[in-house]
Length: 389
Ligand SMILES: [Zn+2]
Image 1 (tube, rainbow, N blue to C red):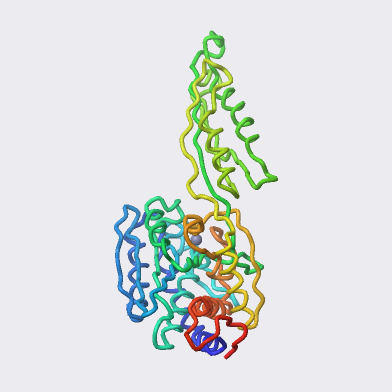
Image 2 (image 1 turned 180 degrees about the vertical axis):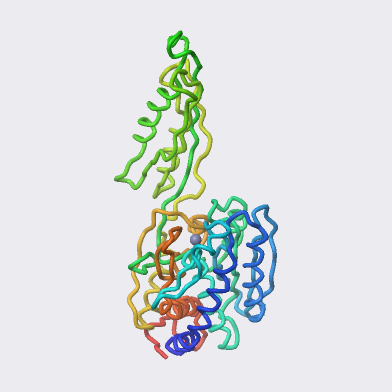
């Protein structure tokens, strides 16, 4: 693997240039035009490697699928997203810049650095003559807003895949891979009460805020932190004026779970909420939008292979769980999935978002090495650590 690493290290400046190109195309979720531009750039890069491009129409911007051929019928799915959480115009305030070993810019770490690394990993593999297996590189447009238009496509592409490699950022500081992620859900709870004059006839009113307050405590108590189930009432709203008994109030609730059974338990409890004050009416919408990504045997095996590849490249690779969701949550129960294979850095969704430049070639080599380790050439051994080149 050392030859691949050296090849990539020699291209570090080009990788940074490519990162700059992607960061300087601002691509907020729902901005189909800007997301198309990111897709066009990646298409240009992958077409040079012989990829066949497909567009899957979506109201949030088309999803792009780039398919790299191989005589080997095994197929690996690489998951990435073109959208960022940053609105248009952010660049005028936070421009792309290099400071020492860090490349700063909106979307650099989540996840344009990972996209660049993956493209260069594929370039490195192509120098070997042919790809070790078929590779589907999926670039979606709506990961940051819940993947509502892409989750079906992601699940479909994961069917029959040898592995799903998610190029979301590695954990900050430790640069570990992610072998499990919490499932994510959200709910809106709305209370209908009855308005009345707070001074004149308070007894004629039904205070929706009071009812909602009891629901806040009840819903929060559904969490079981010891099992990894946490519930956060993040937004509440209600009332119109201090002298009016409020007729309506609502809350927006975030749910995180590590197991599907916990998700089902909380979902059932939420769907059967009833009013403490029987004159009030409680309605609940929402549910689980990303199932938990549980650490399956397949994931553990992928991680083990990646660790061996890292060893052969001269670094130690750890694993970690994440409280946040990714598109890997949709695939973990369908095919062996490994996440956090993207950029090293820090500051996802924050102003200090950056990528560690010197890690880019190394992480690209890790991804290339993992694909090779999964599909060793017949004369090679299956154990990359045992056969350093
Ligand atoms: Zn991301």
